Image 1 (tube, rainbow, N blue to C red):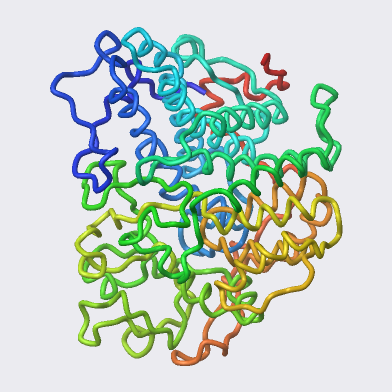
Image 2: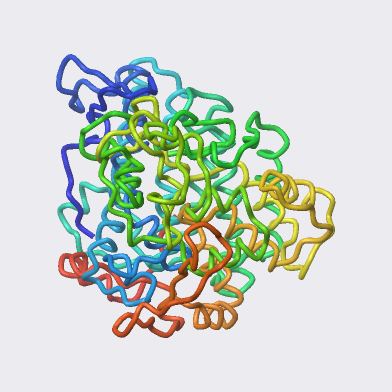
Length: 543
């Protein structure tokens, strides 16, 4: 559990230069310390601004996809380190696993530093309302980090005093039920104290309500499986109702709206668009480690596409299952935004080429569904924002479309299906934007496929599996054990997208059997060395 600790409030003294968002441009004429920091509202806002990028860097750069989409079998990487997540063969030595844990606890640690010290600003006449709003930003980040970590590893330590932890790293894990409730309390505080509007890129009350609806539904699924101990008494119906109320406020009262063109969501020119409730604020054009979005670098399949920028993704594909699902559903808009396929044309990338656009045929042809989402193209395609190691894209972590689907799911609750008018309204808004016909009823299966297609390659599908597993574990394990995790999708023609064949990756890469134990990841071996108590029985957290 011992992580790399800096001086108190390391987060507040990270200087992010060259940002396009004003709140990321934090500057100081002297080295901040606890003796001279948190004396103005600007200090407080600078501290929380630094929580939007660097602290999430190792999580968002690879682990987010390997876990959320690799384990969910939306992503296929037969020849990279990510293959272990697809095949369920991760160990405590898996590098990306270790990076994900460390990054999430860096988020938690920096949030703790802010929360443990920011009340100092009250002594310098910063208003309580403003201080509480900054606390709410920190608690938003901390609560979300705990949700990801708890959903991934189950029982984990809840840390509120990083300084004490640095002196004694040997602490037992806390029960997941307490981790989940702790995360919920953080987001409830954030929803109460965040501003309803703020600078572009900062989270708002509606951002917190959107994440809160996700967490309430997680708790509903946990309660539905009768997994809570007697210390937590709400039932599944009560949690679904809380999720419905939180999502409803975002749907009906916020100023956020769906963008009309799905593909436009994933262009740096549209960072922090009308649909984005929370995105990681990487700094376009920055070469500073941790300040840039490096996802294009490992996802893009061609340096011709990026006009010479690094592109290491020639062997990284959308899974055959995801491709077939989208083909079978008649998906066009979301399919084109998610992965490349023969004959697809993109008029906003490849603008540096002789054609002035990217046509997936001829020299640019693909025989595999290489990843498109998060691939933004060349420097010219991005108005100068993309450079090597940094696409400039503000990575979306919560979009309004997901809140619409969460609202429908909360209304569905424990029913097999629903014809509720409100659920249908928002569910069909998502489908309409995708170019699909409206439905007249919504089932669990409908929500499952809709979320998989809408949020494909955005790090969410594995967590959908996890929370369904809380109440429907036998179904989830059977589903996983019938996924084609050792096969990939091969286009028979480089001009027609619908002719394909399944190919097996070969010996030595068959998947492990999905079991209850494999619904969680092993603790990182580095953490177990420093904190052997992680392997002890969990304890309850004292709230």
